[in-house]
Image (spheres, rainbow, N blue to C red):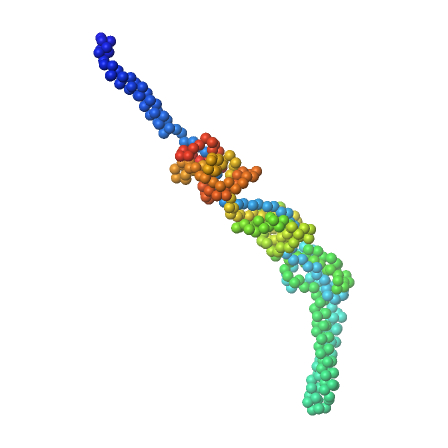
Length: 355
């Protein structure tokens, strides 16, 4: 029965049925492809965030020194009668460090004081007599000269008496005592060495090229790492000078405040760290990140709102062991795809991972 019905169908209708039989599978395939593209999983990619900040870290070796060190000695000779200070002792400004026998200096002071008193009286008497024309001008000038000489001798005796005492000129530490009590000393004899430790000084040697780069940075942080102290100590630049060994090197003198609760010893070796932050004009990317076509070079940027890839033209400035240097085309904070670049395309949605 079915066969009979089929025989009655016209040839034109058969052609239409055959066309539909060919078209329907194609339409089904297209719908399946579209559906498959829509439901394709989002591809994860690794990205690098563009950062124009340039970090430089350099390490140097230095030695802790006192901010100021002086050798203390008397200005006159004599015998020590009092030496109460010991090595390593803290002293205050104005404190007595050593004392000479001042017996002779006190005698000189009394003697020259009496001579000054007499010379002054004779000069004042001469002034009165000169007004009455009793003595000549030349005699008055002689009395004046004697008075001036007596005054100078008395002032010298006061200084000599003062020089018998060795007084601390600043707060500090006696790093070394060179003589013992009751020793006879001269004006050139070192009695003790006093150090100013209200600040410490560290001197490092820096190549001029490195120092220029550090100084050109926007922010430079200098610190000292000292054994036994957990936190680095902040340093500040105090003085610069050309190294005696090489004109291409600088001697950089740094100052540091003493740490609370810790005693530092001069001569201790420390490691100085210089951390510099600057703004670079270029960005270095891994070599496989940058692709090329007939019009130049490009990278893939991730849209921050949609996570869709965009192709971005960039300018290549050069290549190095670190990668390819990009001089133009990238903005601060943008995400650049750095892994699987050959497997992605513009307009593709991705999930990002920071690298």
